[in-house]
Length: 412
Image (cartoon, rainbow, N blue to C red; front, side, top):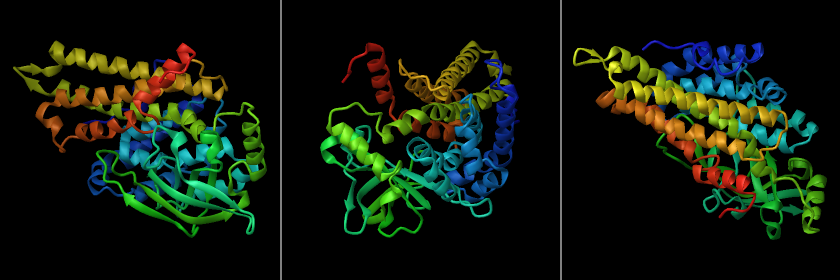
């Protein structure tokens, strides 16, 4: 079926700044040329799309320069509009491309400027030999309950090194990454407030890949366990610096209020982008179903002329536009450093993820038996969509955060 243009889909909501609109077109054209044609192939093979990553690095979409541009974007919309287009191309390949940006968010949120300058190049490699990075946060016994993590970072006074031991799971790029950013406990008595993020450079001994997961969807994105066995890193490899960490821990022990622990802050910052990714998949399914319904004839006329089909498409279009507005609002608020007093980041992620699941399911229904086969892409998009109600905070966790914010009390 024919492809759409970025400009024909996501506009009409707000007037995007020219630079953001150009970036969206740039990302859409890349997705149309390099991602959409090979999405099914990499899904079947369940392999990291290194060739596509190289093309993205050569184009500048996958680079430290783009990461810095996104960080410094005063509108907050650059990463969401680009992410939507990449995931419009394919969810698995899109995740393979943006997987590195989650640890980059960690670096931007917790590291010093000197650390960012020193370490950021290693997250991406070079345009000719790109690398990937991984954020290691979840554990077998600690998913939504971040305070339950057991990976321990102890400081060895004799050698002046941090020693990390533990098991991480569900890590995008885990084990194949050059760089791993690991969330670990420095003081078990402080719970989540005793966590810190650590930069594990390429070639560090004691870090290895555990089980690689065979997933329902986003199969082109490598997801695995990461095992840490007496991993030794320099004292300065804690994001923000050892001195700042000690000051923060001391303040917590004295009962003072400190900012959200670094591990949780990452996911809050990433939620608008996560929502945009889900919208990209939803939009792909909607556009495909719309064109299919216009071409497919039953009982002597296109099936779109039946209210059951037309109304379903109307709901899909409305849901997608509404979810995008929530995403753009949250992204803009974050860029302006306005607090999410009503759970706006969670609202965006919740609505977009559930719209993606609902839209892709409806697309399968509109295509009928064809939609259930791998000869048509909607079944793959439905498999890819489901993860958004699970990772980076389940739908249940998003509702918990929203309800706690609006009720101004703890909801259990």
